[in-house]
Amino acid sequence: MGGCAHARAADLEGYRRLLARTLTGGPVTGVTVADPRVVHGGDFAATLVGRTVTDVLRHGKWLTIRLPGPEVVLLHLGMTGGLVLVADAAPVRFERLRIHAPGGTVALHDRRRLGGAWVVPGQDAEQVTGPLGPDALGIRDAVLGDLLRSGRRPLKTLLVDQAVLAGLGNTLSDELLWAARLDPRRRGSTLTDDEVAELGDRLREILRKSVRAGHIPRTRGWLASQRASEAPVCPRCGAALVRLPVGGRRALTCPQCQAA
Ligand SMILES: [Zn+2]
Image: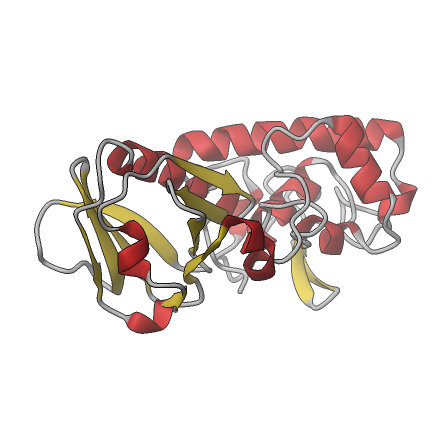
């Protein structure tokens, strides 16, 4: 954990569009499961083949493929998963499954295989995903403020808890707290109105730029530019960054800019 450049809410939005573009144009013509361990729940092939996908949704880190029947296909890409449009039958590296449709063939690859595909009745989706808070993309300040202030837990812990706010992972939550100059150990309940407004502004800016790039930028001015460094320094003030243990995770933090 920690070095992953994926900004899940960001790259997943791109994957959602890829699936919608490819799968909604006509009935699925076939599926190929290269690794049965990633498929859970109902019959993956029988659920998809011959049916036309009606919609592809994203909520937090989950993608939902909607079909005419009661079943949905939930996809989670874990830490290392991705989707790619493929042009021929040759498997891509770490391929787990692929879906063939008139709009093209999409392969799911996942090196560490922490994600997978679940076939469940739509109303049972939460049994797989666990409770999910509002999606981080497009959340309003008032809602964000209510969610974070209701918690006595540290901001870092609240921001990565999918039941509080869905979509942020380790990297994005660090970026956000750094951009808003907030100590990751601060209790959510201590946030002022101004701090909530600043968090909301930075969240929108970071997600907008990350969605456009398809990943969290590692260019100058981004905390993420320092993640892989042996001796990371703050892109804003030049101080040595620290990795603070907070609630079982490590938050990359500037001790100068993010003083409690
Ligand atoms: Zn700094």
